[in-house]
Length: 325
Image 1 (cartoon, helix red, strand yellow):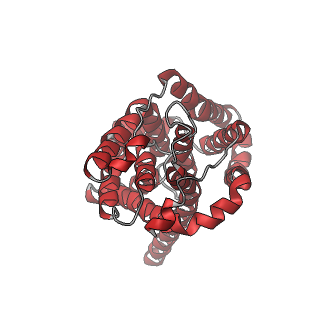
Image 2 (cartoon, rainbow, N blue to C red):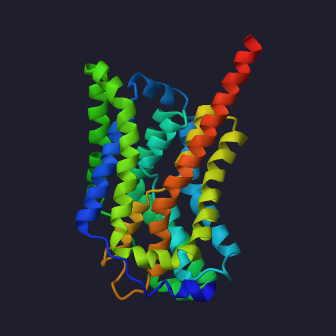
Image 3 (tube, rainbow, N blue to C red):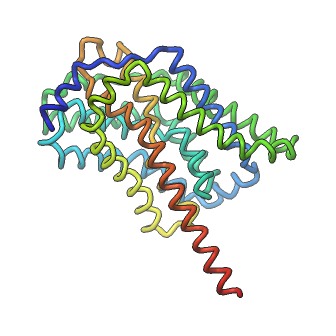
């Protein structure tokens, strides 16, 4: 497996700027659909009980990068340096926008989900380069010095990140809340179709983005499939485990699970395609494949977790009805 993973490093994956812009637009569209189901008054309840917000931030910004490093240590003899650095980069990214949609599907705390996504994204200029430098530095120093070339100082302009946050989160959220407040009947009619079509559009955009690289992707997918599967399962388990340990409400526990398990791998790709951060002559195909496959897999796993949570809710309601009868 190690030898096959080494073949990934020379591979170059090309994403056009237009393709990335389109995906960003779809992410904003997804956020608008989620915002249609949010009542502004409920945000107050989130900050009245900040326990879940604090736990969610710890899961995303501290535990996920730290336990990812531990996973890399365990898999060190089976994975290449660039694959390991790709895992650390993904874990250093903030939560993904699609997590808000998954939280709505899971009957989780949507307001908490939006709060955690906004918080982790706003802190990304510090936490993403900080976590990548910290855990990547430990990997290079103690496990594999061959990865030193991938450990570049990540300099993310705060103004650029804030503008991106506002476009992808702020504007759709404001528009959704305004629609909900001033056009409640329209909002009610649009809410469900928007949520369904939003996820379909997002999946379509991901497929189109990989269109030019489909053959390469299919050729190497099985070598990274189980690595990402294990890594993502770890992330989901962190959120669920912390929520269970600290006895947060069921809806909050679901949100912590989804928020920790869904990362903004799009940001990771943007960083990887930035020649000022990762030089073009750096053979980082392993990082690219790990980050790109995360962008697809966390949608699949997020939907699967949502289905399980919904099934659990239906069973609980069914038992309650039998007791009442």
